[in-house]
Length: 17
Image (cartoon, rainbow, N blue to C red; front, side):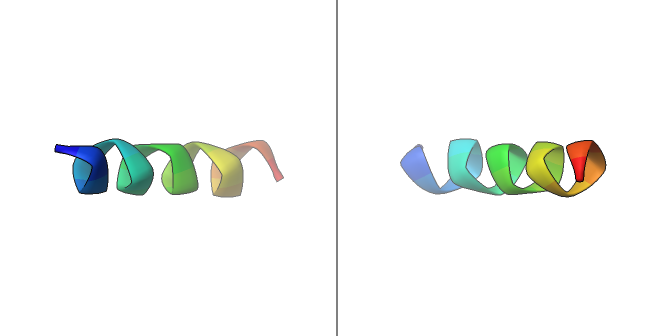
């Protein structure tokens, strides 16, 4: 549950950077 959200957040951070 939290893992999936973490992965999505990390991916978004990469895209933003």
